[in-house]
Image (tube, rainbow, N blue to C red; front, side, top):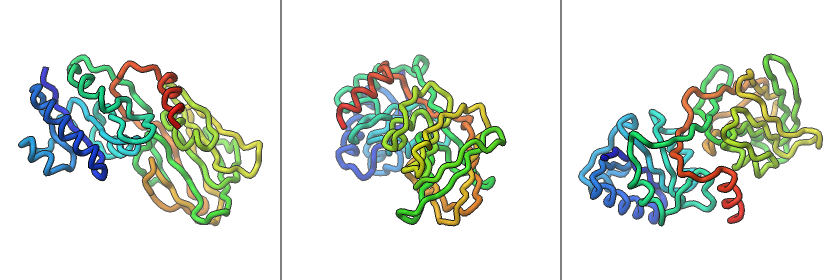
Length: 273
């Protein structure tokens, strides 16, 4: 059965681009409609033109976790995607290059199984920023200068952190920066916001996992300059009394199920570090 496939290679990795071109040729020979994102010379090689995200049945991302995060963030419409790992660890890239074609070629548009991954919508003083699939990070712009945060849940101040920064992570992002900062690994089926302070002043300042059904906001109580970074991309500057509102996005990311248990995958990936 013919599928419409958008291929998104990491543009600065020549090996990923060459692999994408060869994969595209194979899928076209199988009768599928294939196009590349922002790859005019690649599209010309297949005599294709880019189409809208909503026209695609699936997206194939070739790169590391950063490539997957960028693809999700820039999609006009969230479509089922699968990542082919050309990075180092690749928690979000489920397939290896030697197995990807065999897996993709057996997919059928009406039987694709997907897993929804919660994203968080971030607003600062009512200005809405891009949604985060992994995390939003508030970090000091001055090394060795601490920030102070008030955590407000359902309108009630419940915690104060003094730290170099604060990670606001999704369950998916719990295996990323949040894990490096000492946060727990969270099952991606859990709906919640994970707060992990960076180098907290008090040993009693521990990570918090808060239900996504609650109203969560964080207030920056510091005159020191700070930045907001969403999925590794600079979003904006923060100031004293900036109020960061955190909500579950109505549009989750959609990952194609490759039939691998999440915890087995984490164990396998961590052994490569």
